[in-house]
Length: 348
Image (cartoon, rainbow, N blue to C red; front, side, top):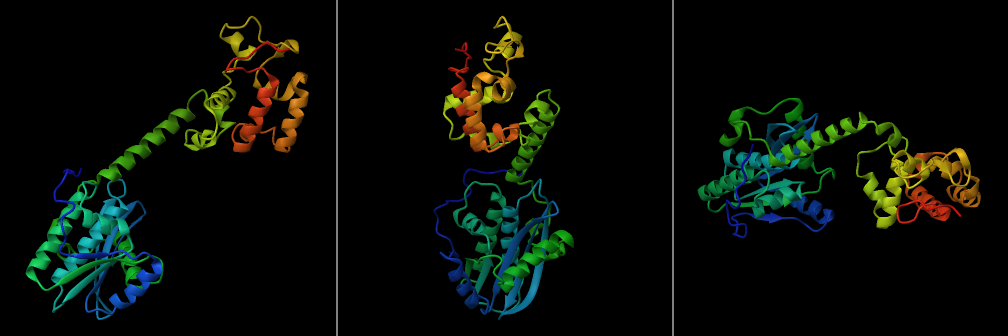
């Protein structure tokens, strides 16, 4: 597991390199047309597929492709695409350092703004050790060639930019065909990278969700609730209730769980003498289904409810699982006057 230090560097310190993120895709595309013809242009990328993370860099000289280098970070349970983007930058810098011939300027282009911002701000985030190695490589390169200028530029992805497309293809090849020879990588990349903190957190969260779903699917409440909301457990319920008042949200919980103030439930927990409907009498068990579909006392309110939902009232997924279904059903429930402040009251 990687270790993150509060501050390896001053995040506000001036850099020896330049970074450019244009305000629009169009501006970035025009800028790349100039960059691609420079003496040294390098394109980098990170990619995730088939459960793995890969990275690559492609070197161009005077518009002609010269060399590509690939690196396989490992499983997506231990690494992220963002980390792959950072490793791609590291490969690009290494290409610049090991290339033959003179150069006055090196431009490294990539389609991930967050990766560029990571090396310019040097915050204590996941992938910090990769950023630190990148900055050290830059310092070493610029110390060896004091007149050299280095710039990192954002290019929009999926716009047919030759270098960007080539880097994307090579990053995918790192996953499907494997990495380049270790001798083509920076020394610090010749050993396995430590697990990325963000990736580990994501994997733990995924496993927790899977465990929660498995426990829910095996619970005695699953059969009842799956007839109302097949997505549980999920965040969908929070979205459905986001605009409801606290009182209405509490009422919806009662309707979904069956733990209502109706006589059927109250009698089961020894809070009512009889489980029968106060309007229909003996042998008419009072629960939500009775109120919604059977009791003649609520015929007028029921007819209005059915008109509002246009024949969708027979499906509990619609009645208690959609935004408009919940809204109209709560209106109907209030008209029955069988619920007040969360408790049923005697019918009139």
